[in-house]
Length: 416
Image (cartoon, rainbow, N blue to C red; front, side, top):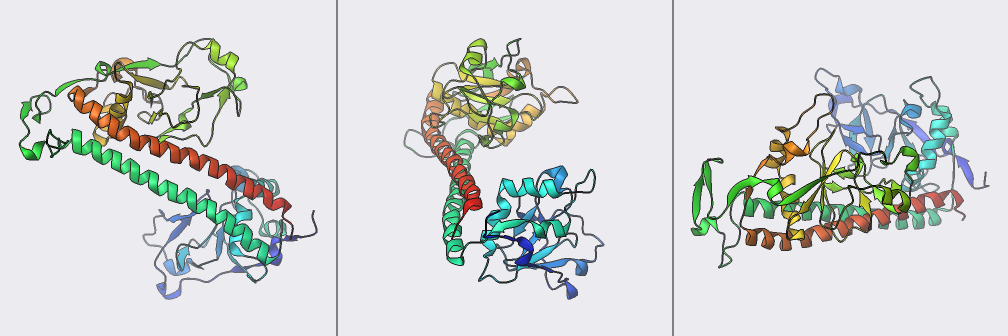
């Protein structure tokens, strides 16, 4: 152990301030991802005076089930000045912030190496609790306060950029969905004079299937009129766990990579070029859509040109949707699949009880409203630009998170 490593217990002290008189109202919980979250606990009939008060720059942690969860939930309160939290959580603060910054200590707690050490020290059978004394005996490097400020500043610069990107991504996704709703639900797409179609006397006709009016020239149809639906490879060449690697030639998507908000590449598995050649089906092309069809059904991802993985395959619990004509038009189908009404329609076609499934034969039966081709093309050219910007920021965040991990890992070797 380096000479500047010191036990955590030398720098912190336990607190136990109760909510006497119900002075504090905001109730927080503690997540395994080391964040404070709004509490979902049922507090009806609970004596809230017995809850603990936590104040800004104080920590809350859980020492229970550390070995089972392979993490020690612990968080630093910074978003609000004070809150209350369950009496089950130890609350502590730094004795002297001239010697140790709360933000620096929280950076240390964020390291995966810290969780591994906490898990190793955990005792108590199946639940694997961590004794308070064992926690305070754990050590960390304590550089000069000037060095700590430098480290925290660099870390916060990157973390804040990630948060900003996440906010921008959410706004762009909301914008794309708002455009889809305006054009294809409210029928207020731009007419030839660039005015909202329906509210400016655009010609409408009654549709008996929908029991409502739709724009002239639009009709009801099915997904397979616009896209080919392609299944993944399920044959004898399907890759085994032993043939998956942390890096390689071809990204092999799993269920966790396709979420409610598109692709998530934070955890990935790859197959070799040789294994990729053995597989016959399930290889993505740019502008393809991926839809989860088993388990959590209905999550979708769009393979735009901004995604930096050049070779991607799907696993057997997904399908690919590929445009029959104008390839970029799949962004229209992608937007439709993310719309709440389409999600409800998909639920009506699910089969299987233990594990819900959406077979291709049922997927292609789902009725959809098909606009005129020119309208689909105009929408696609507009919204595809938004999607590419979303994907660029997501890829940037992946690189920034790698840099955050690098900064955290370097803490172990910090010198004054």
